[in-house]
Length: 123
Image (tube, rainbow, N blue to C red):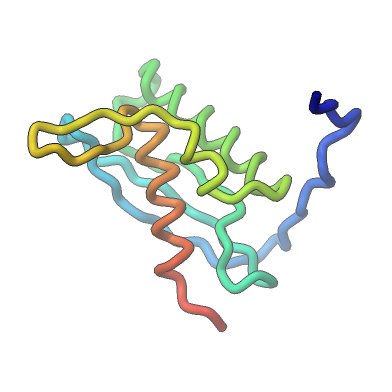
């Protein structure tokens, strides 16, 4: 039986100045969401934070949900989890063409973080 830790792994603090890239993702419903991804300069562009920038009506419930999801992802990333660690536990749905896609905006955000790890050039 697995025991829970009394405290999480230490949080990886980021320098105040770091590479940040704004990216656009499109939901299955056609909404465009803009996310800003902050990278760890010491780990070859590993994403360590994600912020919601724009896409939903200001003050809407959906905007707040995406903002909160980004905060949670940022904390997970800063405590050492990789986007792949989160992605394997998220819901997926089958599309008419048989492809499997993430079933929620949360899954799309994680998929973007996985893709970003491979897109950012290593220094």
